[in-house]
Amino acid sequence: MALATQGTASNYLQRAPSPSGLADVVDLILDKGLVIDAFVRVAVIGIELVTIDARIVIASVDTYLRFAEAVNRLDLMQTEAAGLKELRDGGNGHDKGKGMAEGAKKAISGNGKERSGSGD
Amino acid sequence: MNAIEQRAGEAGNVTAPVYVYGIVSADVQPPAEKGVLGAGVSTVRHGSVAAVVSYLASERVRAKRRDLLAHSDVLQAAHARGVVLPLRFGMLFHSEAELHDRLLDPLEGELRSLLRQFEGLAEMRVRASYHDRESILAEVVRDDPEITRLRGSGRSHAELVRLGELAAKRFERHRATDAEAVIGRLGAHSVQIQSDAPDGELGIVKASFLVRDRDRKRFDDELDAVALGLRHLVQFTCTGPLPPHSFAVLPDEGAA
Image 1 (cartoon, rainbow over the protein chains, first blue to last red):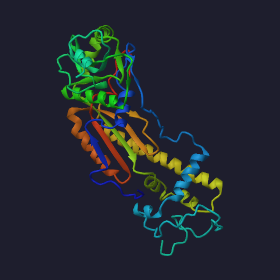
Image 2 (image 1 turned 30 degrees about the horizontal axis):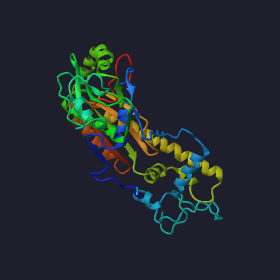
Image 3 (image 1 turned 135 degrees about the horizontal axis):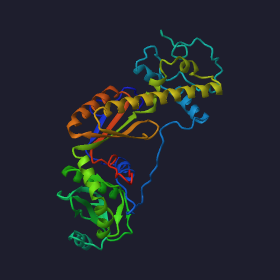
Image 4 (image 1 turned 90 degrees about the vertical axis):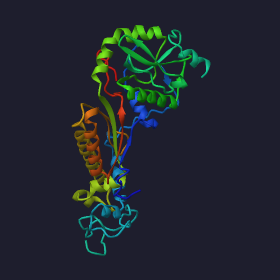
């Protein structure tokens, strides 16, 4: 699902009166709520509690290369859908430098695309 | 109902381990939900407060997924009848006598005070994430001249790293801005906010808002407006009204 325009009136906000899925529930009742030392704690089996830190904490070269790859892979049709009018061609602009000997210094318009036939 | 549940259903079963879901006012009827391990749910009263409980067959129990859901369901049902102070999952006392001696008796005053404090309040749990990587990345990189210059084939390793670094930083900044806007706008209609680290690489917000019942419509309308404005890039979910899992804290123990 690569289209930039997503979300209709009904699905960009989903409301639930109660937690229904495990993901909803796990956060609320395993990490939160009143705790007192006097309790014996019931162990929970069969649940994998994986905390994923969303932030880019490790500013590593690997992380950056992944981002570069993702940026280069961006479907230009999508940026057009998102509002950039100058892009006409779709999908053939990015070869990831696999042996293509083209110089980087070609006439590149503001959108970074290779020479496109029609006006930019 | 098996023999254990039947026995547990009788009042004052002082020998069975007691699983506690939460604390309510003494005059509230227990919810009819089935609880953890399929046990029935009742209340144990102490003065002005009561514990919502299940009697279990043994202390050596292992809970499963469905028990987490059952715990949540019992609390939701209790919340429909009035204030409930939720306990963390898995709290078990050796016996009902211990429940009185170690929780209800020493803390009755604090619990009563907390029940009053959370009267007319509910937790709303909001999550927001980008729909997918491509759309948000496209949004972040377009109109950025330096990123644009570095895109395409034939780039050196150093240029790729630089491209990635710029994109990563722009993305993080965009995400932080979106998160701040969402939390700010919803927080304006809330008494308190508890913000957690969002889930996953596309997560923007995972936060709980403590909202007065009389402000709930404003909160809901604001959420609608925020979500509508961001719909092309962001998916929102909102669960609630919930008991105040994220906000009810005992004064001394500093729980949750």
